[in-house]
Image (cartoon, rainbow, N blue to C red; front, top):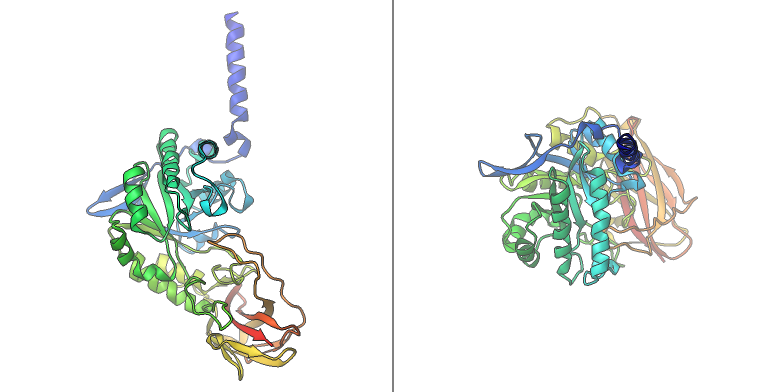
Length: 440
């Protein structure tokens, strides 16, 4: 009987091991054990440490993009918004990161009040906690895991402060089951009400993370006004946001060129992120990939065709101190001949023929190519980075395209449109710019 019991015990153990989430995933690296990540204050400076080594975050937010390419440009980390980032298994994402020497700030996608979730619903809040417990248990031992980002911009258009109680319950659960990784929550900006409530009610959060775009230049003042003098990461920043830019007379935002974005990013990184050597522990620039949000090019560092734009190379310089040998074409300005530029609320006649003029800098202009497309402005607009459908480009309107001019015919139907121009080189790089216009 004793022999039979031992046999049953070992058989059950084998079955449990074989059916565990980690083994089902096929991860190559779980057997190596977790990295130990902690936050320390050393000589008045807050920093993350990974396995005893200081780790200043040089990262990018990445979804639906080539996350592993962060490493090739000198970065050391990327963040996700959810565990199934890009609809891929989380352990597959972590394996890819580990293979390229990257650490991952893993997002836990908490439900948002602005999407209809009720943080007074105790059953729903408990179910969410248990779902995250399963996700944490599955991923906590992977060596590429840096920490847990609990929710994203939960303070965006909300009223119920119980969301922060739920955040802390999740952080507390993580501390109980995973003693190796830091916890944070990502805020849209930073304000005194959230800071005060979180300071009193969220002891299991290790630090706050802040997300700002054009307003990032004033981050020191925002921190002072909010009364926050603790450690933080800047987990989203990049070009000037579409809500912060000037608009056309009909209310459409005017996009920076890829070169203007590059200059904005370089200034913000040097003057704000690096400037706070005491409390800022690094950042994740947005977006290492491509997405539709007001335009297909506003936030992504890559074109829809996969070309690298100038902000990619700017981040390489900021992360490494060296520029890449082949830099993307620079587009200094763009206009429609005789009608004006991006800031002029350009109006065109339907079916009229027009020319776009671009100002380009590159060491070898003769090697550059140009392509263009015209698309209607999106009618379904996203909020807070949610999904936004991309309008289809209108075929047959581009007559010709080169560095001298892009000839196009205006659409036959009245309405709001935008012409997008890409200048490409032979190394899969591109510059991007566009002009919004109205057809009467």
